[in-house]
Length: 190
Image (cartoon, rainbow, N blue to C red; front, side, top):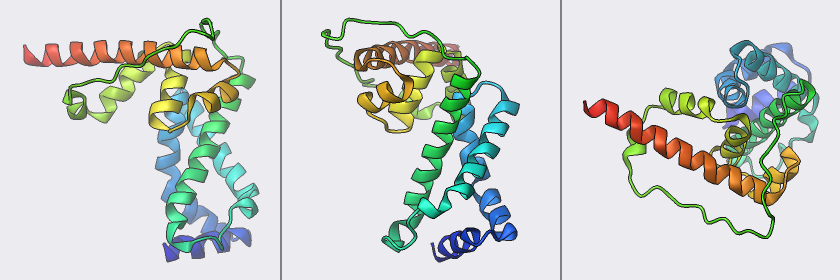
C-alpha cells in the first residue's frame, strides 16, 4: 500500500522508471479486463496500452490524499474503469457496435439466479470462453453487470441502449451461459 502510494507519486512527476513499474505491476489485471470486451488478443493488448497512456495522462485526477488505507482498491477500481471505457470507445470507433435487441420499456424482466453452486467449479478460462461465444451485445452487458458491477442505468448510458434492453440482454446471456455450463458438466460426467 505504501509502495503503491510512493509509485503513484513518482509517476505524477513523470518518472519513467516508476511508470514502467506501475505498468508491469498492473498489466495483467488490465489485459484480462480488456480481453473480456475485445475478442482479438492483439487488439486487447492495444487497449491495455492505450489505457495506461490515459492513466498516466490523467493521474493528476486520482486523489492520493484521500484515505490512504483504501488506496489499492480505489486504484484498481479507477484502472478498471479506464480499461472498460477505453474498450467500449474502441468498439464504437471501429464500428463494432452490434445492434441491440429492443424490448418494451414497460415490460418488467425478472432475472433468475442459478441455485446450483456447480459453476464455482468451472475454470476461469472455460468461463471466459463461454462469454466469448455470447453475441457481443449480451457479452458486453453481462461483463458490465455481473463482473464489473455496473447497474442497468449505467450500462444503458455507456452502451447507448435502454434500461429494458440492458435487462433483457443480461437475462438472455444468463440463460445461454447456464445452458453452456450445464452442457459442460454433462460432458464431464461421461
